[in-house]
Length: 311
Image (cartoon, rainbow, N blue to C red; front, side, top):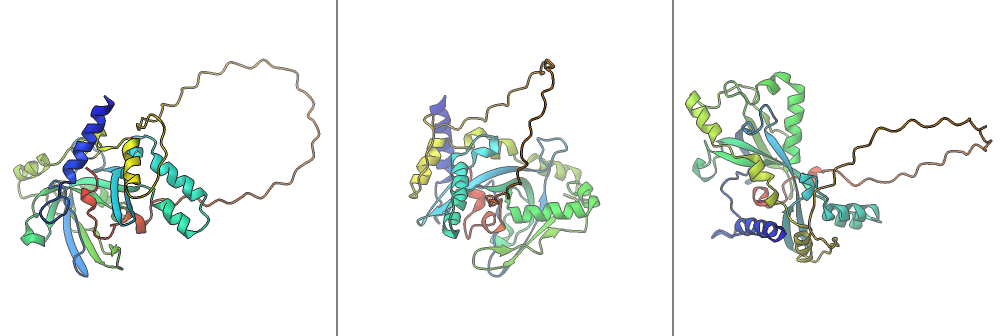
């Protein structure tokens, strides 16, 4: 069973790492927004998760994207499925022992980032003569855009109630401008206030929804997540080290034991309390926690295609 699991993962990765004639990774299920020049604008319609009745339209997957010694490796983080991840664990250890910013930067390379995947209908994308307009794709939202989703929904309940409506719903406008050499600015990205229908007729609406991908199968399937041994080999390929257990397989975290009902304790005569000197409370030692997802390292990694990082 284990060899088959490993073989399936390698097959999936190999399929996605097959390069096109231009030398880029390709998976035509995915659409990606990208800054071209100093400003770019796209309009998408977030579609419901058809496999979850009334659920949120996106699923979360944690991903490792490591750039080291001029080489780049990528793989999905087992923590997404509730498993332990030796790469994340090493990052936390390195962060705890960090003595300076250089040490912290090395630790950060081991941390996974959050990516939110959903089905979208692309309404405006002028690249390639609008070839992608009117089509349904899988799309990965970074943390910056995800925060804008949540912030705008929290401030506008009416928007939340009608967000995914087939009739009278809302598009999302992605507006990107050049912030610096590494990261674009999404400050003007937001849900469009004007309501609009998903399509002109019910038949067209149904046709669009039927094209939605199964998020569980496309994004969270077990075969898309690596073994510990695979992660070790990937890190070693860029000159980094990783210690793993002998089993070398990621296994689900153990289910917490259910506590049994405690038996009543037998009462004993109360002993007189001993007199003890009051100790002055010691000052709590402040420790710096490992950083959570940061915009600078969760956002687009330069020119890397986040939609092709994973599957």
